[in-house]
Every structure is written in structure tokens, then in C-alpha cells.
Length: 504
Image 1 (spheres, rainbow, N blue to C red):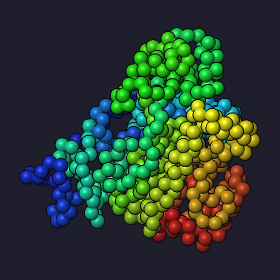
Image 2 (cartoon, helix red, strand yellow; image 1 turned 120 degrees about the vertical axis):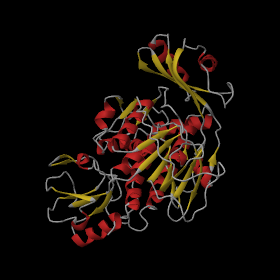
Image 3 (cartoon, rainbow, N blue to C red; image 1 turned 45 degrees about the vertical axis):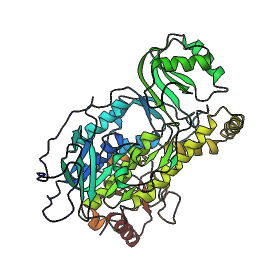
Image 4 (spheres, helix red, strand yellow; image 1 turned 30 degrees about the vertical axis):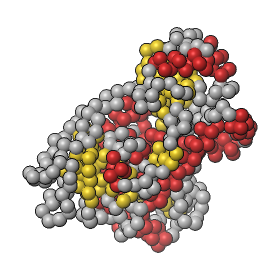
């Protein structure tokens, strides 16, 4: 499971006479930066961001308030784009060993449609994986690359100035870094300390979800679920094998929202809707989730940034939450590293919000739509039937699947071919597969003309001359996150775009 690496750092300031909970004002005598970046939160987003920064030798400290790793065995889904990112960093084989592959179909509002044919990815499947396992793998990856992780550290205050950020812990210790990133979840302390608004809608409908053993034969369960799902979309029992099922059922007034649900809550709701509790017992984990939907007004305030659930929350329908956060980290990591190392062109760090805020807004909208389609109200059911018909058209089904799996994202890089701003699939190249060339987190020029060069950018952009590459354009410049930053065959135009994305 998780590595228990705890780094005891020396205090950065002489705190004699300081009042606990307050921060020293910026000024002379401040201790030098021991860290380049402090990350609050060691969930999947924080761990992935730490690893991405370490690829560029950024000094990283991750602060995690929990003293122990996640223990409950909840199954989460890695979508196509996240699997592609794992492949880019050489993590996919590790992840696949612990996961279970299943088709991409049926994930939009649980409408039972097959996956569209010919999805544009070498990894066109979903991977179900226990949450503690993926968290452990990403944390180990960050530690292997040199990230420092301290558990049991609660952020209590922060102050920033022109040179950096001072972070105060609950025990009064003060730490100093050049940047701080809040990856500390939906109730983010960093976001609250920044005073960043988190507008949206509170939860209206709560749902119980868990994994538990069921004694009733599978055929009987399947027949009952098929009958009930005609009118109750927020209801399922899905087998994991060996008698264990994922159970989803409306919470409808059981116990207190502030209290964790009990097995009896599940039994009560199953009996109310299905007329039987299916003999559920021996739960692996039990949870309650609502449909609260919120998006941070800003992802950056000077030297402090937000990522993952600290920046956006939405219902888990479609399984997009973890994926959205990990993809935030991939977008932010190389940009923040360039800023720290003094190589970032002006405005590069601001493209993090410019690119990721609209993506999160779109995810919030598609989860809002899916929640409506799960309603038992007659109007919502009529719309659901219409969507079910429309998804028989391959273009509609493909559009919705690409939206949820994040393979349809196109960042606005200006006018150009449709591929510009999109991610490039893992194509065949003479050295094997494209993604295998991106493990160092650097840019890549793939040159089919074999006559261009990256010149003075060779310390941050790799070069591959390959006239046989499976590509319909002469050359592409890839950012470290795999998105196409330039298409063409002119050296001067290429140099301009190398400057735009990777500095002088």
C-alpha cells in the first residue's frame, strides 16, 4: 500500500514569541526558499502534480493532513485520456496490473449503448481500479522521482508576497516556497484562505453507494434491477465477482447527511424500492454523495493555484472526477516547472486557467445533464427516451463518449487544422510508440520532413525525424501534455512557436 515516507524538515523561521495561527509579515530576515513548490493534499491530483514537477527537478513538498492512507476499497474508473497520460509517463503497465478493463459504452447517464466503433485511441476502454491502489501508485511514482511527502500536516494559514508563499501549519510551523498549489479537496482550506469564490448549486439529491456481499442468485438480482431501472435510474446492483456487488440506491431521507451511512440505511432503501434488501452484508465501504456542483472563480491568485476537487466539484455520474483532477495536474505541472526554472514565456502559467477552467465547466454541465436524465420525473424520462434514440446515431454516441473520456478536448491555440490544440493519439513511430518518447515530460518535435531542428530548445524539447510516422501532416510540435502546439514545415514558424511555448 502507500509508502509511509515522512520527512522531518528543520523549521524555516525562529518562531520564538510568535502568536500561533499568525504569519510573519513579508520583509527582511525571511528564511530562503527551501522548496520551489508546496502542494497541499496528496490525493491523485497532488501526487501526480508532484511527479510532473519532479521531472523538471523542481523541489517539491507535499503536505497531507491525513496520517494514514485511504483504507476503504472504492472502485474508481480511469478514462481513456487518463490512460493515455499514464502511458506517456511509463505508468500504464503498473496500473493495468491492478485494474479491470471494460468497454467504454453505457457511461453517459447509464444509458445502455455500446461504445462507438473506432475510438481514436490505443487505450479505448475503461479501467476499474481500487482507489487506494491508484493513490498508492501515484504517490510511489512521486516519491521515486524525489518528491517529499509529509503526513499529518494541516495547513492553517498562508501569506504571499512578490518572492514566495509562507505556509503555516496547525502546529505553528512555518514553511516557505516559491509557489503553493491547493489540491486539498472539495472543502479546500487553501481556496478558503485565498477567498476564492466557489459558486454553484448545493446538493438536492443524495445517493447511497457502496460495495457489499449479496446472497441472492445473480439471475434474480439482474431481473429485479432490469424491472426497477425502467423507472428508477439511480438504482443498480452491479457484480464484481465472488458475490460482491456495487450498490447504488437513492438516499431519500435516511439518517443524517452529516453522518456516514450504515448498512441498515442501504437495507431500508433497497426494501423501499425493490421490496427486498437482497440479503446484503459484509460491506467493503459505504458512502453517500450528493449532486452539488461548484466551480472556483479563479484557478490562480498570484503564487497560489488550485487543482482537482479544490477547483471543481460535481456528481460522480460518469466517473469523471478523479480523471479531471489528474488531467489538471498534467496541464499545470510542466508550466509551473517552467515558471520556477525561469524558462516560462510570459503568460504561460495563465494558460492553465484559460485551458482547464472551460474544461471543468463543460464537465459540470454534462454531469448536470446526466443527473436530470436519471430523474424519475415524467419530463426527464421523456428526455431520456429521446437521448436513447439519438445515441443510436454513431456521431451522437461518439460525441458524448469523447466528452466524458476527455478525448474530444481542443484547446484554443488559434486558427489552424483541426488537430491543432488536440491531443495526438499514440501513433506508431520508428522507435516504437509515440508516448514512449514523452516519459521525461519534455516537448517533442515529430518531423516527417527530416529537415527541421529544435535548435537552442534542445534542453527542453526532444526531436524525432521520422518520415514513416503514421501522421497526415508534415510535422507536429507536442507540448509535454501531448497536445499539438504547432503543425507545419517552416523553420521560422516553428521557432516562433517554440518561443511561444518553451521560452527563449
